[in-house]
Length: 157
Image (cartoon, rainbow, N blue to C red; front, side):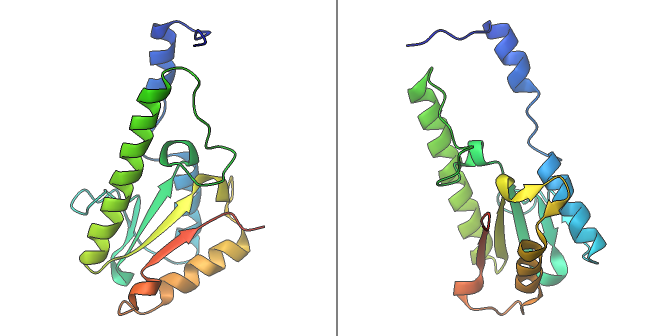
């Protein structure tokens, strides 16, 4: 087991600055959606999982997931801390399970859900090709088939 290079107080202070809402990737995506003409609500607590962006007109809920916390498969940002591995594994597992439950419950309520990963969003938002894909998916009718009810927007090459 490797010793941490900072004290527990310093680690606590660093971890407390990690935000769960209004992160840079989330703000960049919201800015992009707004300039494209979409109107939305943010952090709707009355919906399962409190989606980051909700487009009520289209019955679409968007989650902007951090790759580290939500375990983006195959992403280099999905690292595992070397200390307290069991604690981290339990935390990550709970996060992934909670995400899956929120998506399932939203779909059961008739919402379409998109997951946008942090690594796919740059300072200016999604790449044009990715944003066009997201916009086309949002524009689909709300009576979409179950196969089109979930969009997992991964980083495209």
